[in-house]
Image 1 (cartoon, rainbow over the protein chains, first blue to last red):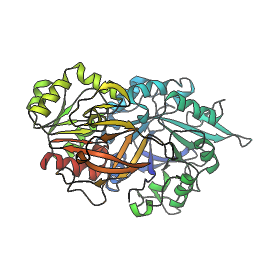
Image 2 (spheres, rainbow over the protein chains, first blue to last red):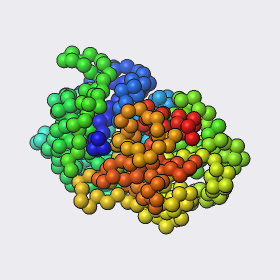
Image 3 (cartoon, rainbow over the protein chains, first blue to last red):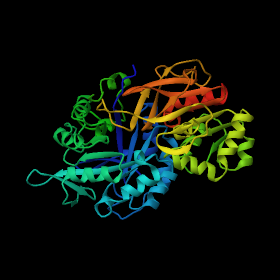
Image 4 (spheres, each protein chain N blue to C red):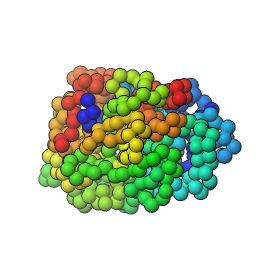
Length: 257
Length: 203
């Protein structure tokens, strides 16, 4: 009964207009609906946690949209993590004040990895998530990418993740760009390689299409699993339907001891 | 009116938000007079033990809370760091706690486990005794936890709930009108709403 269950986290993406979208390999955003409505549905479904990412903020050089964030936070009675356009401590303080528990910092780390330390000093490590996007290059080598996958970093993924841990990140959100929206399973090799060399939790993201996939990611060493398409699409024609597994379905998702 | 103590430690808005959802008036405040006027007090908080105690004592809130809780017997609910501060002290820092209930705060020991610290996620709770705060909860109650340190009570009789992560630990304590929970009821949807409703109606 008191067995510890890994977190299963829906990831919602939004654009400038505050609409929910879902991508494939970080491109081709498809309209899903209204975020506040989605959060209400996820409340009813008693989700473990929610991640909310504004995927257009960085590309447009925009600040986080505090008004939308606050509308969403008011309806969220589960832990809420926000990412998108967070470039300094003032942005981070503003989204926390709007009612967010955790911040996911991504593109800003390319030039300013110490932002993780400054965030952890103010919010604590457990509220500071380093979000790392990984893409295979032409030769099949894993590379850290930023700005929606458009920019390559020279530091290898494992070294980058370890740097984030050393800077005080409480968690690593590990996103596979190649698997995003494909619903064909996680990149298990990547998850295993990164999580076995860190002592902080890794949230695996990118590729989930079924409960079996979630289980595989946890077996590979992830502490938590995130999914987008799996919780917003239904059937092979990808009809929009917000879903979340029941507690019974989730009961088998226990970490490796 | 419930006073949510504002001592600049973490996201207090979510506590007010969930109370509003269940129809309970509350205010986030550090004003002594407003806190004195409240029927009940919630001491939330996320962050380190030392900075929590230092922020409380900066505004004299430590003395005010001691008076209201120990002399006036105002019901208080501590959440996460707020609950830890109500014990004697913590391995996390040198500051002395409020010492409302005898106990200490110790770090999770995961030497013999692959489970990572902090403990972050949803975990079940088991009742160790009867109390208005927790007697009526939805079936299989579970709550959201984020912590690296946990309560270690001096007296078994003060332990209210137990949870298991790496090993069984005390996840809530209670002595008369003084209650503390390690988890976050404000982020534990229907279970959190039920517990906070109990705090306003049953204790």
